[in-house]
Image (tube, helix red, strand yellow):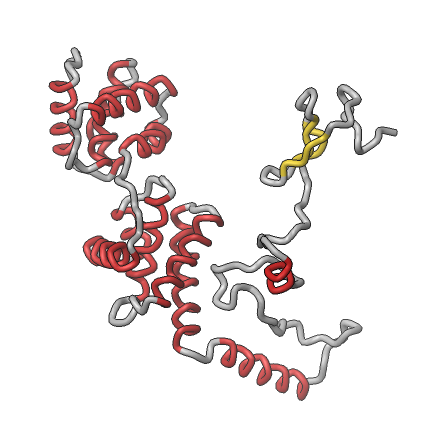
Length: 303
């Protein structure tokens, strides 16, 4: 029988807990002793006794993607008593009325109704885009900031939600274009861009410029190219950025052109149409960016 406080490989008792990955590691040999560790601590931090007393509570962690942050009670739809037996028709009708008024009371104000609609739309778009729970939480927090600053009035909820998701993706270096978000949100690209610029200005968001290298792995994977092509494309883009060659150019078009050139350099050539379809740009854009990169970087290749 092995001791759970001892490494099974080297017998060391120097074990470390990595709650971020949910693992227990041996500090001496690096063996993963356990890979299913739960963090039972709170999701909040306290820096003094007063904060600790104020923030301490029971229940699940708060989630900003829920209108009530996940702290309210809900009445289920089972219609059974404590013993699991069905309740009478009269009691079922009574429970139906209770549920209805409970739901209405939980979204009584206009802000709560707005959040209920917006967060549902946010979760839908994020699911289509494959965004992680952390990004969804960040987007929900930013949307709540917009409500607090009264930036929603006079604007479509869906357009603000799409703009918030786009802003959070850019701030976290996630390659999602306005075209992609417009496609899944059913809001015009121009309207999303207008809402995004307004939110960024009013909230003073520090949104970095889009780095075209962020799009390369996505395009390479979609075109089923090798890792060598990806490395070469990123190197071409970095050389271009250093020389200021692609200033003012669309990041997706430049990244697509770099992938197009790199695929040819490694004898894994893809057509301009294939690359254009994956990148969401026109073949003309790829040709123009390709010529610029070839000329400025002195690439000796004929395509």
